[in-house]
Image (cartoon, rainbow, N blue to C red):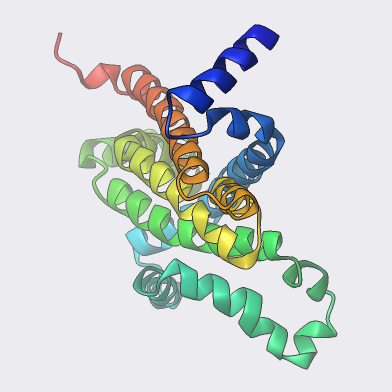
Length: 245
């Protein structure tokens, strides 16, 4: 290991315009950023997905009263930049004394939690529209089969409609996951040390221009590669019945 570090140091000093050895010396900073990025991504996908499912069902079945509310929520979230939403939650809500005096202030004063809330809301809106389209495109034969089998509406959605819709939505949802990964960089604007925040801290510490950002780009490329492979495997497994013999 020591020989490898010496080789990297020599290469950085003599043959490379970028100081890779300095990046390795600060691996803990980038590791912290990676942990925050992955945690924000996974938790926002889980929270957003749980909220997206009922929203998608309401929109697909046009539930009276609730459908206009769901439509308004989705339209507002998709129609405003995520950065603005994060600023409103982190900077805007703190302006109200009632918020600062409430129990919610324990969460809303923390930039990490504000970022998670913002990302979860954004994920819910976009994912809800993906699932709504997939539910609406459910083949009529599958719906008629649930009726013929005597299933209740709840049971039909749980056992047939939602699993079928999720399989069809999988390619679009994979792109949404990658999009969510890229949006996590916004967390660095409210002092959260994510991958981009680590890159900025590194560059500012050593007065560098490229090393931190190139390292961040390589980290994101590696994560996207893993996400793409996982979804490719899921698509091959869950959509194999649609392939021609």
